[in-house]
Length: 216
Image 1 (cartoon, one colour):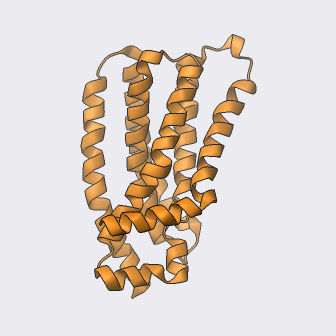
Image 2: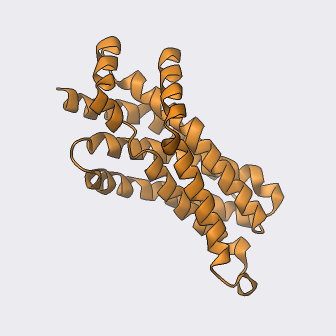
């Protein structure tokens, strides 16, 4: 497992566009939105979270768009299958690396911008934790869509993964409201942690099955 994590970390580090692009887009959207409206007429603290949620959904999808496709095209995916005899560890390590390299920094960017736009600094840790767990769930779901869409077009991945992502967005919205009103956050974050562990254990198994169909 550590060998796979090192390999995937090295791959992603040199794929500058894959990890830097989503972060820059997140920064661009969160910076441009307040500049495009008359902020004196709005209370940014109340609805800036909505912009963060939309940005999170968009950047998570972009970050995972080519997660397996390049490995499939250069043959490294098939080589790892011959070594491991299964894709489960490969998928698990790849998602872990993507969440650490891209998901957590994006969550940090979202938390920083939320505080910069009027959210109480005491809520920084809560916002960061909510966004990080949401990214963990979204990366697993969008990785599934990417695995299905290899050689079949990105539209299949979109149609498959976006409906699955809607409950995550609803859950994130509930967490955000609990932060704003100061009630029920512990229960929501506990649910998100539980879902994160469950999805992270089950989804790589489903993705590995989908990848085997491309190899066979």
